[in-house]
Image (cartoon, rainbow, N blue to C red; front, side, top):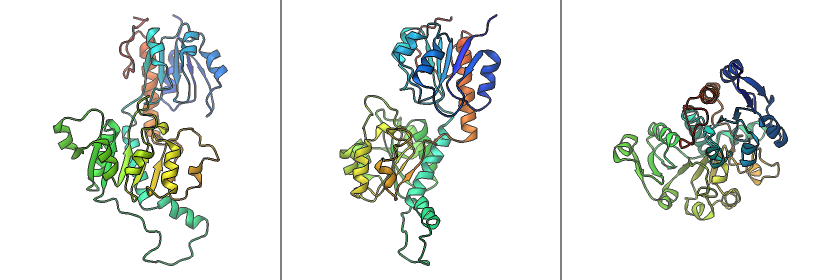
Length: 330
């Protein structure tokens, strides 16, 4: 029996790569940079499956060009880089890797909260740049406390809930807004209070964003919402860059309408070298590392591989994006 043909758009951690290589005729784009558009089109023309990343544009053109395609497995939680309607129309399963990165992202949220509140990165740079010239001083490099403050969670899904659980250790007052309110029993269990979106922005000392990216959430956090925040407040974003209007955020930070921000995602990645965020010293910037632990990336790799292989075996993937798809394999 002939093995299915699979294209993997980037080297991924074990055990995922091993699983795929043992069961398929795998073509791997090696290296850290994504394949070019032409390479992506050329290498997917005759494949049965694609394992892709968030940076790979799997659009209608590519899907129509891949005549034998049965499954698109993305090593990511988000899937806005894939034309879901085009895939579903052609009976192609789309899968992603939620859940397995929940804890690592929630951990990083608190890393950003503590780093921005206590000016950890700023302090480290001060010493490395040989600018620490004062001995201990009662007014030097003052930050803000986290314990007992109000944390607003914008989007209380899997990751938002884990952030809420971690915040309980800091005795934080927890507010949240989501388009779907949680059952009262879950709110009680998490010690969270539902508020409207304007109240969330007005009352939060720290506001952590956990929204998926879609047509309704692009630029959701704009100048109007930022202007509602306290001048002492800190914005944290580990979801998707375009959820925040970056120009409006820069204006809010420069004019001190809000105090600081901790950002792991951006509208354009990598950041352009002339991006004004880079020139701001009192914020924390990270290069999209929220799931970047060995444990999490290995789990993502394994799940993405298993999703891919299950469909090629005529079965449903574990974590499916388009459950209404007509499975052309079964």
